[in-house]
Image 1 (tube, rainbow, N blue to C red):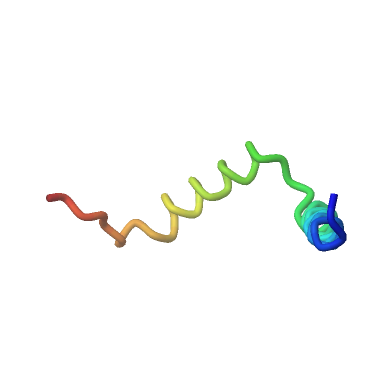
Image 2 (image 1 turned 180 degrees about the horizontal axis):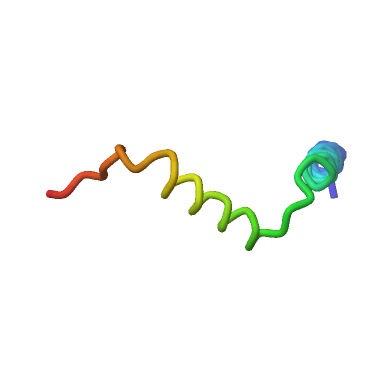
Length: 50
């Protein structure tokens, strides 16, 4: 593995660790929260219907 690849992987790994600590939700909880937000706050936004 080249040195630049090691640096890149270390950078990505450190970002993932920070995201885990900042957002300790499970994926299912996050999807549920997005659905609730869409249904309660964003009902006026309509998608395109060709």
